[in-house]
Length: 119
Image (cartoon, rainbow, N blue to C red; front, side, top):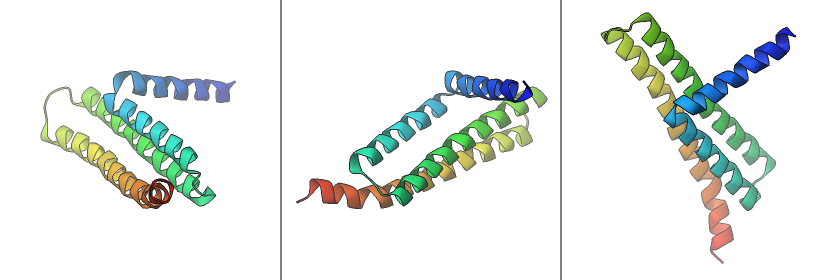
């Protein structure tokens, strides 16, 4: 029963993330588009693994960033330079992962798209 409750809380957190965070919805949409494109291009098994891991990493970091923001808001409701720094660094982690994901996507998709679209 504890395990079921733990999964229920995790799913509630995921739904809360999607309902309250615009960027999380953007990242989820991007992941759906990336995985759909991978399916259409019939990428290799290794490329699938890389793409799934990359999408998962970006979504997970978005969730961690949101948790940091909530915790900072609770602990420091007033404006404080350290609170701002904590939020900015959390956002930077997501940005770094998203830039990496974009570069990985280009490395994987561009050759497939060239082969598919250019005779």
